[in-house]
Figure (cartoon, rainbow, N blue to C red):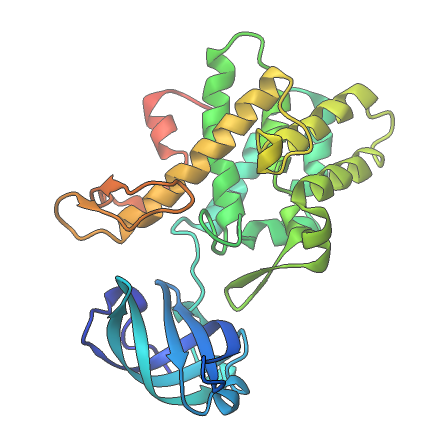
Length: 340
């Protein structure tokens, strides 16, 4: 079974007869004590809510997170957001749907990005850091997971291949800035770029395009988990310098920039400062990119209020200069010669 229309195409007043993926399902009660069900439904283009007021408990049994549903509904506006007024709902076997309709993924080729990341690793001058990176990015379960992992549960790079895309994009900026600012250790900065979110391989788990936190991820967080993973691998390299391991761990533990943003410590080295700024910049620019991809073909328009940025945004559509065929480092490669 194939989807006929995607959520990003829906307009108020439309009638829908289509497939949806359950992203969240919450059984509650109305003020009168009657059961009701609040569904968040998704496909690869976005999300839409769909409250269920009748037979809520029965519908909840077939509407668990990760389930597929066939709905007949009308699109309506509620508090300036579209939602579905569901008229009919039935379960759909996962084997009957095309997962490509529901799993968002990077617009860039995953294999090409993986090869570029490995090429950058070979360019790292410090032999200890190069050995450390090779333990993560040459072969094995972590490398396989890294290539398809999302970079976040939501907001930025939250799709298949998002972590790989995020790190490769950051690497282009890091290479440029390491040449611009004197005294910056390029090898150390690239180690931070590629390892800063390595803990997310254990913090997050993806199932049919839905990204959720693991128990360990909630209890520890990816900064602590990433620092532990790096220490574990460094200890398997004979005579790996203690001071260098400390520097790499500091990059990971401080990359959120401020303690109120989840960092156990704040950046205290030039490389840590740059890493924090590059990470923040790339995540915000990716958010803007995703919003621009959804903009109409002509002119600038105001977005909905963006809670993560605490502002409205005035955006035009993303220029389509064969962007789907490019890789994240194309712009930097056009402006100056780099290794990527």
